[in-house]
Length: 91
Image (cartoon, rainbow, N blue to C red; front, side, top):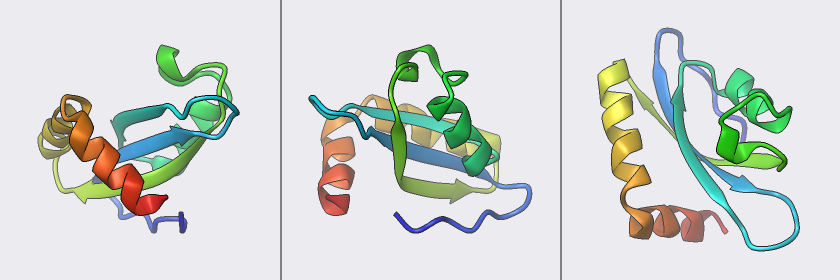
């Protein structure tokens, strides 16, 4: 995925996909700094469920408020068909 251009004072919802061998895993989260957050996931200091794997950013969406981003994160975390659709478009 092309490196997204970050906008100041914006919140992002992102979708990661694992890079390692074996079944592909995905992870949804939100952040105010995509680069820093992806680095945290990849160095083992991110969410517990992402530790021990390498991740690539496959999708991101920008929001003006934290509340909007958190709502979209919740929506994606609870809607696997939507996540699969997004991953299918990127693959």
